[in-house]
Length: 406
Image (cartoon, rainbow, N blue to C red):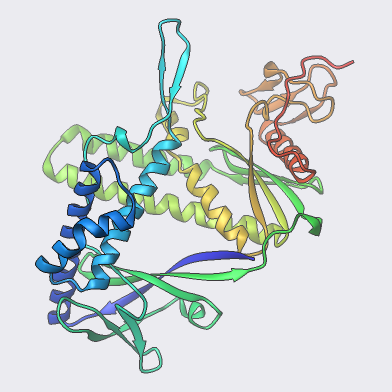
């Protein structure tokens, strides 16, 4: 069995007094979170809940109006944020050239932080039953404030099925956005896991921008997901950003922030729709194979100047994470393989030759066996082949460079 995780979003409808209580509680939660963050930073990044509780719990109970459960939630919130940042910095080693012009990689950890993590927005994490609960047959919600608990109405439009389909409600986050109040609730559910013995379908997926994804399956079928509309829209965002940056006014900076948020929402929506289409097209018991793009940089020399930043800034990792959790829900899985030579290997004779790929015509043409193919499709074919090796028991499948065949 595997545990699925989702987040449902409820719209809350507090009156004026309740809204003031929520804001006061959120600001106090934020204040304590920043104090805990500073303590962790000053004490060698101690992430032990027991040690933090030992040093700070009594102090907070004496000076704060938050109840005991909420103070414990503050500790968990801050520790979780530091653990997330720790994983992020581990994935991006520091690289530099030494005196011999060789690239050296230095692993990074939390000690590379120059200041403590800041919690810039009021927030509050609420524990199920202790800090929030549902009443009157799911018509009302009861929530903790700095004083006594309060009851209010809510809507769960679009998330109704998660209350009746075996999902378990967990910790919730109180969110204030543009004058509206929301409750984001983490939910979990156990489902059957992916089983390699079920004769799964293998799908190799090559990611890019000309085609956001090119999928090749074990039956020899190929799906292309065009990225031209995405490129054009990103170019529009880039031009607007340049115009605002050239002004440099306070108003322009505010609009730049709004533009970045709008672009992020749009990119997230594109990745959601793309991954939903993939899992719908291939169904359950599918092995989706992706290249491991950690620390990989793209060659953008063939792109026009206006689009050279697109490969660096498109959220490929987000697309990967969306596909992972969507695949889990249908007893499928995602495996990552080495990207080495996936765009250079001939699937017919095995020759690995960089010059066989012609970027100008987007074609691969093997000079040894004369095999011809779209270059994105070829990448997906080689990725699918590595998926077959993984399924047969090879832990880290990788293409070995073969320059001649006998």
